[in-house]
Amino acid sequence: DLIDATGIDAAVSAMAGTCLSPTKEEGNPKTRAKNAFIAYEERMLAELKEEKPGLTKHQYKDIIFKNWKKSPENPFNQG
Image (cartoon, rainbow, N blue to C red):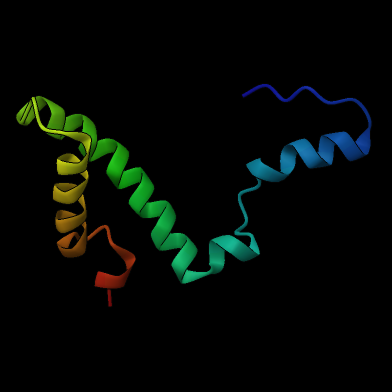
């Protein structure tokens, strides 16, 4: 990814989102779970639309959330 910034402050601000070390928000279990769910939802939505075409967006989201509660990708299911 290309970052376009002039000056040190602008460069540091632009690179803040690309840092590999966890930020305060990323360390929070609720935030990690939310981010994991968003990634899961995006991936599963594409799969479900192929498997079950014609459902409403709400129906897709209901199915995804029910599956998320049991998913090993859910951080709250690990441990």
